[in-house]
Image 1 (cartoon, rainbow, N blue to C red):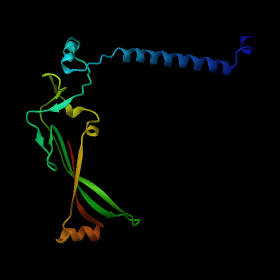
Image 2: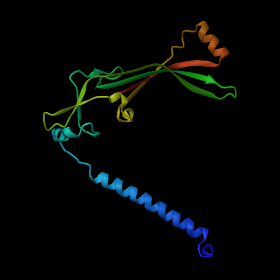
Image 3: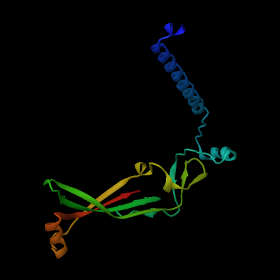
Image 4: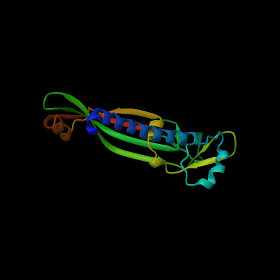
Amino acid sequence: SWTSYVSAAGLASLGCAGLMWAISSDQKQRAALMESIHSHDKLDELQSLRSLMPLLVAVRGRVSSANPKKCELSDKMAVVHEMVEEEIWRKERENGRVVNEPFEIRRAVDHVEWFLEDGSSTTRVRVEGVQEAERLTSAMQTHQVFVPEDNTKIGLAKFIMDKTWHMAKQGVRKTERF
């Protein structure tokens, strides 16, 4: 019978080889796609791509705006501005361990109309939909300030929180991204 000539290991080897062939042909197609990507050095060269719209394009250049926003914590100007304020509470857990827990109290995101320029021509590209951009915060600068709590005022609410819930407000952390 033919089963005496074919082993299970041989069939498994044949199956793995077929799988590897399929993966390599997929990678070959991806490599061919990457080779077909066009690179342009100046923004005005992108006009040639207008007939292909809609199109995903990666553009790099200098940011400009007619009316940039002044940051709250620094004197810098920005076209995209995010401000997050968190109260930091020192809390004693049941096991005696003390941790600082942040509670967000404010989040504001503002942006103004802005453009990318390459500096070599008068061509500008207007940037839209920046709110939906992935990993935008990793490209932004961050400035952080901690405002400590004024412990000279001891009110009834503060006394109850300290003694009953074993929590004490440490201050407010303000994080600005631009």
